[in-house]
Length: 476
Image (cartoon, rainbow, N blue to C red):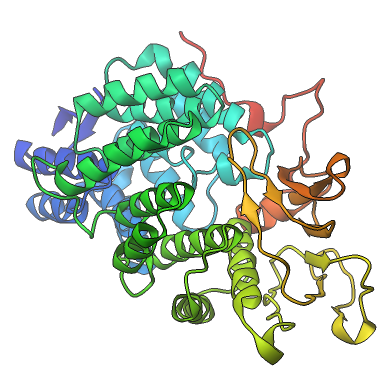
């Protein structure tokens, strides 16, 4: 039987009760509140042939890193899709292809042009871990913002969409406008953890860290109808990381350590392993730069968590693995001080090169290990004695690492993704993290995200007609 979903699309579902449970699950999933999977369980129990319910449940399982269950639900949805509407079939196909490793940003763009209010497929392109951000292009913030702007004529006063476009503006440098949009969206749904995250970024990027700290403290403690945000919420660890980062910036190290131990440490976080590790590693590195290490026990726990869960292959994760190991190595003493554990490689991982050199000391050959260079497997490292204490200036607008003595610090992905560049005007003391356009011929994006597709070719400035930039949805 055909009914209408909350996005004003026709949807095939047997009863209003199943549809109500489906809507509750969508809202919980988009707000990163616990319980989305339970709502989808109810919806599919009421209507065992609810194809869209199984597709949504696949997304909820994926959010919990249960890939096997997600694929099972996606296959169930595909088996039911033949007698559904064209929109439902395409929607389910996009979800299933993503879980089969055949996800395509072009398919999402095409679907959005036909159905610009179909939120679940569109959401797969958005955010920090969406396909646009992980596409490998340097201007992904601008692409995401442009994509959302092209959808704006089709959306009016929806808290999920407004949160997404507010976030995109904040990340794209339009901080004041984006923060205003995110705050309005938050008022429409104060249980929306995604909105809290966007607002936290807005306050931080604007330099208003005290307001951001007060906002986070209040919402985490009693923002859900007077109750605290559940530790099982998808953003509990990361929002706690934001609060700990503010404490670090304000020099409140006691609060930072307390938040880390209670909500961010691998033994305390309930987030999926990758997100837990990224937050723990990022805070460890920032704390080290500020001269306030998390402590031997915390760093050992992070290292053990890394060894137990990860192998090389996802660049964003691998960068954090390298930063965590650098923090760990620099914090150790005695004979361990010059050691550095090499990041493992796999057949699909990009090559890495990590070099650290302090003049005038030359790099002794005995302390340098080099693998045979190849397009996908190159690594060398030299770690000298522990560098002098460092400080970190404000990261607004550009993060800078200030070293007391002239030094050369170089970190890059061999395929040109990221690098730390030295500012020669400051006698080698200032370093900025840069993201570089991936050169023509690089296969990092296609090998990792789209293994069955041709390698990515970065568009020239004159010709931006590559599939990755065919993202605009033109009003009818």
